[in-house]
Amino acid sequence: MADILIVDDIAENLQILQLILRNEGHKVYAAISGEVAVTIAQAHLPELIISDINMPNMDGLELCKLLKKSSGTTHIPVIFVSAERETDQIVEALEVGGVDYITKPFKPAEVLARVNTQLKLIEANKLAIRQQLSQVMNQMVVGIAHEINTPLGAAITASTHFDGVLTQLIESFDNQTLSADQLKDGLEESKQGVALCERNLQRVAKFVKVLKDIAQIERPTSPEPLNTISFLNDLKSAWSKKGVMLEISAVEMNFVADKDILLSVFDSLLDNSLAHADLVEGKALTIEVSIKGQHICFLYYDHGNGLQGITIDELLKPFITTKRGNSGHVGLSASVTANLIDSALNGTYHLSEQGRGLEWQIEIPINSG
Figure (spheres, one colour):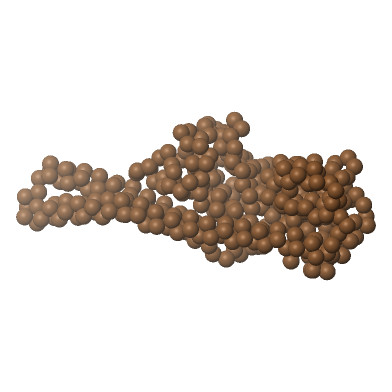
């Protein structure tokens, strides 16, 4: 059953639609005007909206346009209600983003048929997204398995060479032929071998972390009660130990979410800023928190140089990065982070550049359990 918002300035029409829909088990919100409908839609995010076209002040067309402009409500399908003779308005309603229409006087069978069609389309779209996500995750895992061979092979080669150098030094020592120059050269080669092993094993560790993040997308979530201030203070404390300054501006609010996944999201954003953003010395990375209806909005920015050489779309593609090789950047963090927000936290994200570096606007339900 679905949450459905109905909008009409005539109370009798609202009562009829409520009766038809509630008899089918749907949860129904009713709005007597377009202005009230906007408030309800933003607060409750219904799965479907049924709106009359002709209403005073804000008519159904204006309501639809306004909803489609907002990132929080643009995805909600709108079915319009009109009299049979208003064919011109029906065409205009579909042009502004409406998905279907119902004619007055209401026929229960028609109302339910058109509502059920849209709900089936919503479910089909969710299934397609889940299948697409699963395919992307599989591609990431296969890609990581391929990419991990390079640093792992380099580390094995370096350790083998290191073993050979040590063996020679030990043999020379045992034979009492070890010279000072040979010892010096051997120790220098050993030092280089250790450094090469360390760099490549750190890169392997980076891949393993990404695999763990990918696993979080697929695993069942474990929501728990959280508080915005407490959560952000914990995050700030953890990163201050690494010498990272984090500035927080937040309203205090209790919410429910998977803490580990939310921490993974912000850890990834902070890691990326430190690696890519060319940060201004002494300038804190910033997280601002506000409330939007039934959602918590996290705004993150780092005052860095933003994207350099790639677009926002490219940033979200797997294995796209401006840094490769020994730097340990695998080009998966942004893609995995976006999927964690979307799939594991049931949230939405929006990326932009507003002169404060790359900004992530993240919205998650107050109760994402």
